[in-house]
Length: 251
Image (cartoon, rainbow, N blue to C red; front, top):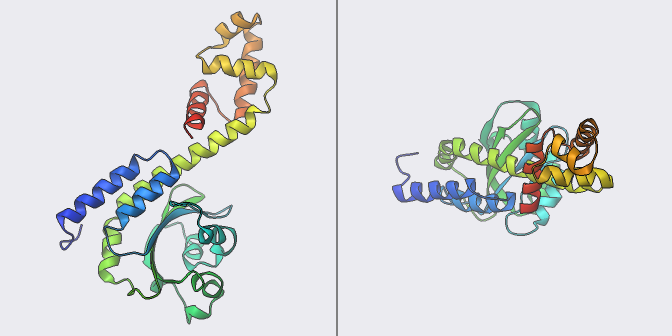
């Protein structure tokens, strides 16, 4: 970190990042990380979320539903110069708003529809690619009445960017687990009574041979049922099935 970043600040930042890395839900991770990010420099809000190249953005609420997040994700994210930069490049970047705004920012549709009404004033945003379609982002925001971010703030955000990307990767992992768990719950309703029985045996550790013996069916029939269960539940193995069920239960 920078030489004027105290050991106490470094310890609190490191501890906060470690706590975020151990979070069990996206909201818990967001709350822990945004609290840690406040140690870096003064921000009125810190947001984390995802940009996608194929569907809408997703901002993670960390203190209950946030109408500005929902409005941003549903409507205006495509007007955001940071999203437009993400859509035009495959490279990671971390920039202040001043590097991207063009002309009179206050006359843009994005400012009129979102930035101004939300009382936002200045930001530093980092966007880090996580896979072919998805990037995680972190936004450090100041509202009207606060000073603009300076060079020291940007340098601190850059120095912390490696840890920030690791946290966003963990956030992505937690969101995918939740999505898979939800998909499992939906798919369970589509299983036939026999397939539900097969799934219960698989969750209890059974295999094609033991399931066939228990249900008085052939091993080939048991294997066919297992394939159908995996297909409907969107998994590829018993290990994936057990992990998905465990994560769904935890959520």
